[in-house]
Amino acid sequence: MSDTHDDHGHSHGHHHSGSELSEVELRVRALESLLTEKGYLDPAALDEIIDVYENRIGPRNGARVVARAWTDPDYKSRLLEDATAAIADLGYTGRQGEHMVVRENTPEVHNMVVCTLCSCYPWPVLGLPPVWYKSAPYRSRAVIDPRGVLGEFGVTLGAGVEVRVWDSTSEMRYLVLPLRPEGTEGWSADQLADIVTRDSMIGTGIVAAPSGAKS
Amino acid sequence: MNGAQDMGGMQCMGPVEAEANEPVFHGAWERRVLAVTLAMGAFGRWNIDMARFSREDTPAADYLRRSYYETWLYGLEKLLVEKDFVGRDEIEAALKGGHAERTAEPALTAKTVLPVLAKGSSARVDKEVTPRFATGDRVRVWNRHPTGHTRAPRYVRGHTGVIDRDHGVFIFPDSHARDGNQNPQHLYSVRFAATELWGPEAAASDKVYVDLWDDYLERLEAAP
Image (cartoon, rainbow over all chains, first blue to last red; front, side, top):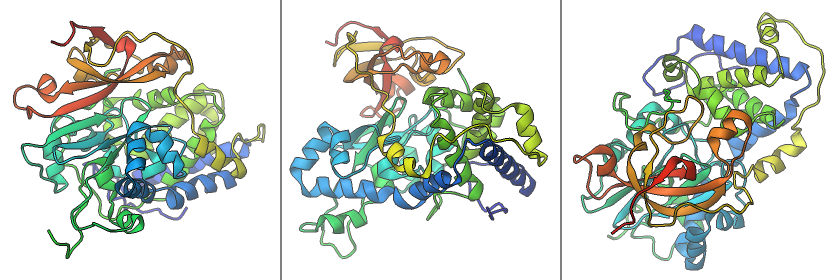
């Protein structure tokens, strides 16, 4: 509990003064102490939860799912048919990923995921969401101006590409299967997983062709 | 509730600013808020829809000003008081350095964290319910403005879409948030043309897919 200064880099258009942040910190500490004293909390359980989400679950999981789908056509079919089961085959299950849906990008269709009402996100495959995903600019504009938002991520789509935005209003959780870049023929699943980005699985990025690849 | 959380389609929020190499948490207190929220949720005295409503049921200006984990913190405080874990007076006393007696045992221990997280909590209900709609049906989203929790965003209400897929039978969030009543019913992925939602300036090819429950939908004539 040592971070007392405001180094958030939060990007939603407001500032935290140092005293405001301290106020929040004090509330959190007081609440945790109270709940621990009353016996509701096991401090070791809290440390375990934090370790899971800070160090063990993250977008590398999703990247392995994508790489497997790129290299194994049978797996890809199962992934698109029953994503929850196919993702569980790789060991990724549970909280905020109980009901998974995978949508495939093609040269004609680009998929993009948002939660306009809160911050729903597929934790077992992507970890906890980044601040921008939970922020008002993304949540408000992804549905009305997806191409403008994509432009802010440096993604420009041709007019011939259909954009499909998936608003996560229920407990279904969405993962985008991005396009496999040219120049990766013959790569192993491990090599491919290394180039799959988090944003490409949300649909706000594309997986770039490796540098030096023939085009 | 027509609150600040229902922001799909607003245009006054500024550009999306992604932080390069963003850490999972921005400060130790965010870690604690996440962990305490999950550990207290494990008691099962509230469900996910009640938790969402506790966060959105707040003055709009506060909702927009607060960071994500601040919103979680204030929502958690409300739930803890409502569900009789602690009194407001106890929270205030703790803020002044007061202490409390041990009266309970944890729901979640270090050993049970991994299995509990890996299992999750299914919102699917194993019950036969007749779907009112089939894939390809044209539907209109109801024009209702409930003051409690709801998952039909304002930007689709009154608009026409097509049933793209039936996800099966799921807990209905509106009643679940109110009193825990699951009111199980079919959940559909509904496809809307961007031009239906946003007018002729939207790209003619683009679509928005929204997951909507049976109760939110009204039937229109079959697609030609």
